[in-house]
Image (cartoon, rainbow, N blue to C red; front, side):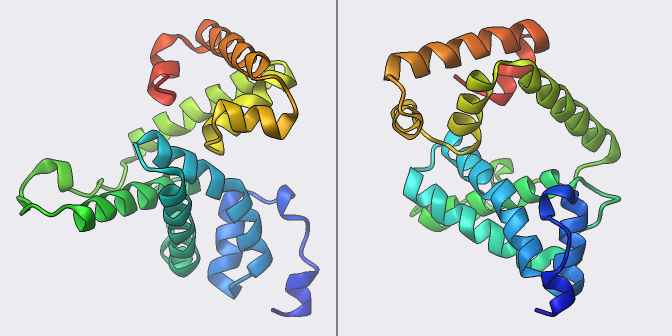
Length: 199
């Protein structure tokens, strides 16, 4: 890495797309570290919500982020947001792992095993609009509740792990998460909340 790359602005000020550009153009490790920090925990949580064990999800999330590093040059901002692209890689990695673990003969024409298509512009807009609504709703929550949702659903921590990390009683953690969900339902409606978090 060059000195110029070491002197780059703090990654927290850069968009996801700018970080991807730095990775693709110069294999900028600091940019990758920033992107990893933003997404590795969220990818792990996503995979765990789809039934993966925590250790398996951790390993798969690392593999997804390695793919992001290797394939940064193939990212096309005109086709998808960075988050959409990363979670498509995660979904496809999950399918690959299921295929590998399966011992029965698979029907290659079974739609369950088809990779997700590249999202069209309407889908990207819908995903981005929903993400903006969720971010706004999370920002309206008290900090204690929002922090617990991020730990539980984006980092994939159990209620017990959240309680341990924040030095809180387990009952307090569960109560704050319940209150947070009630407020999100009031703000976003049941449909979006159920779609995002299958509780």
